[in-house]
Length: 195
Ligand code: GRF
Image (cartoon, rainbow, N blue to C red; front, side, top):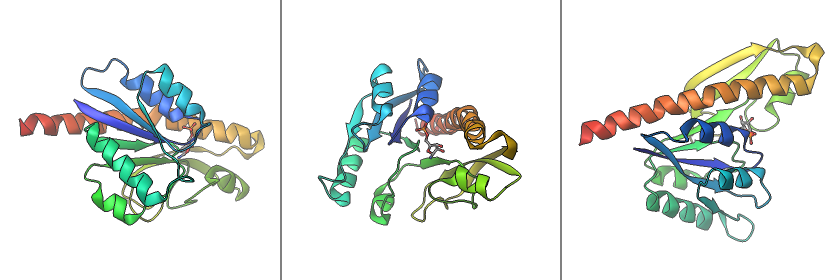
C-alpha cells in the first residue's frame, strides 16, 4: 500500500483531484495533508475527504523546528511519497537530505521557463505562444529537479489571462493524478519485490 502525503498552502484544487483519484483505492492512500496556512481552503477539502491534517506555523516557529515536526509526522504515518500541490514554502537543504522518500511538485510553466511565483502571468505578459505544466522531483534549487512530465497547450492571448490560467489548471487536473498513480504503482511494485 503506497502511503501518500500532500502538502498544500492554498485553494487545493490539485489536492482535490488527487483525493478524488485515490478515494477508495485498494493499493494507495492519502494519509496526510500538510498545510502552513490556517485559512487555506484546502483544509476544508481535506476534512471533506477525512484526510488527517498537520497544520504548521512558520510564524510562531522557526523553519527548522517546523521541518522537524513535518519529518516526525511523515515517519509516524509511514509515508512513501510526497506530492506538493501549491505548497508555498521552500525547504532547506538539511530537510531534503533527511528525506528518504520522493518529493514531487507540479509547476504551472514549461520549466526551466518561469521558475518561482506568478508563472502563468509572466508567460502571458511575455506573449508566449504556448504554455504548460511541469511535474518534477524537488531538489534544493527551486523548480529545478528532474522533469517527470511536461504538457503544453496553445496560449490564446486574445482570450485573456483568466482563460489561460484555467487552461493550465485543466492540464494540471488531468495529469497530476495520472503521474501520481504511476509513481504509486512503482512504489507498490517495489514493496511487493521486497516482500
Ligand atoms: C497550481 O497552479 C500548481 O501548479 C502550483 O500551485 C497551484 C496550486 O493550485 N504549484 P491549487 O491550490 O491546487 O488550486
